[in-house]
Image (cartoon, rainbow, N blue to C red; front, side):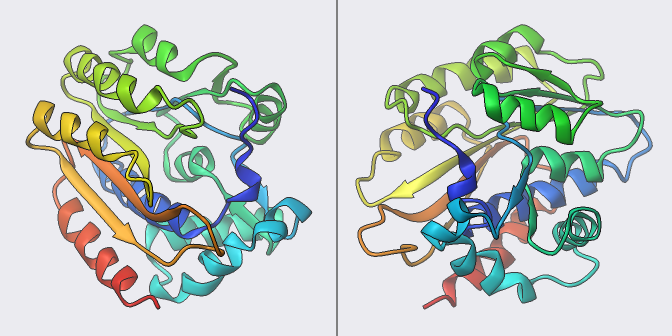
Length: 257
């Protein structure tokens, strides 16, 4: 489906959770002087204007990054990315996950992105002209590209879940990805919904990958009737220290009213 555009939700509390942990993982990986691959299956446009009408319409950024930026020290990888984005694109700019990766990775690292929506893909390529950007189904691209070169690295799977069959299909995809790329970090983001639509998927994932890290945070709905009340990240082969980082972030979320 091509109706989803993340500008309506950019900078919300789920983005804070996801991007803070993604930035930490990429910062950790780049400490070692070896090249790595970054893949993303549902990339979006990479750069968002939080003053745009779409973003202000939902108010999610106001309840998100605008509210909790002081959680992060100036030298935190997530905050470093935020500062770089503001300096380059203005104070209302917010980095999507491809831009988070681009700002933290090095010249010898490789970024491969999939985005099916034609306008989002065009904006993505404009923002990241040196990345490999494919207008194709992200799940199929991952099957075709794994294992990547360099073999060391991370893949983020971040679908909109507008296609309801994703909840059933994702565990099968990830099981194949983990076998094909037996050294890669595979991170799946998922929404925590009042409908509990994610529960069966997570049960299967946990059974298939018992050593994975499951980071979940809860927060008040962004507006009355909004069904998302939390954010989850399921990480296969989590880097050392991620569990502690996720636990510290959860403590912050637990303090939200």
